[in-house]
Amino acid sequence: MAGKLYGLGVGPGDPELVTLKAKRIMEEADFIAVPKTSRGKKSFALSIVEDILGPGKSVLELVFPMSFDEALLENSWNSAIEEIKKVLDEGKDIAFITLGDPTIYSTYMYVHKAVRRMGYPTEVVPGITSFCASASRAGISLGENRETIAVIPSAYECENLEEILDGFDNVVLMKVYRNMERLGELLRRKGLDGNTLVVSKCGTDEEMVEFGLDNLDYSRLSYFTTVIVKKNGI
Image (cartoon, rainbow, N blue to C red; front, side):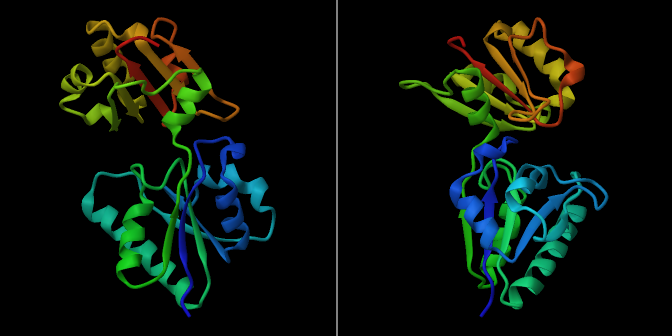
């Protein structure tokens, strides 16, 4: 009988935010699948759960380069799927760990859909998103009463960001570090700079939480930076 593929969200960085269900599945699975941007680079997702797993767990490294080249990305997905199939065909279960929640802009879902179409058993286990953790860390809400919420990935590529800021009460901007200064200019122009929360590496030893943009140290921003803009104030 074929093994089962699990997609596990392990949260944004704090190991204590890993769910009990994800912990149990990781302990029971034969392999932990780890997404990496390159073979020689350490996996952030794996670093979150290393102490939970302990030594001796078999790790399946899967490379997903950071690229907008569709052909390159498709090749990486196909290669990962083939590696996963080999393990599943041996009757072994795989826990594929991913940052945050697997259903929110995660590479895992491309693999999940392909493996499921092939007839293998699969299961998605939710995790805590970076923006939920960031709002909790700062003690603010993401939405109250009838407020609307928009979640935008890679905001530096979003051509209609100004319209989104105008149309929603609360806007979450994910992975904005590459163009934070330009985003800051837009927020200042719209009078929203004081209604902005910036959180980088939430839940880690290098965490940074900043209310407003006046004292923001752009040099400390990482790839894992989340911005929450609240039109009605923080």
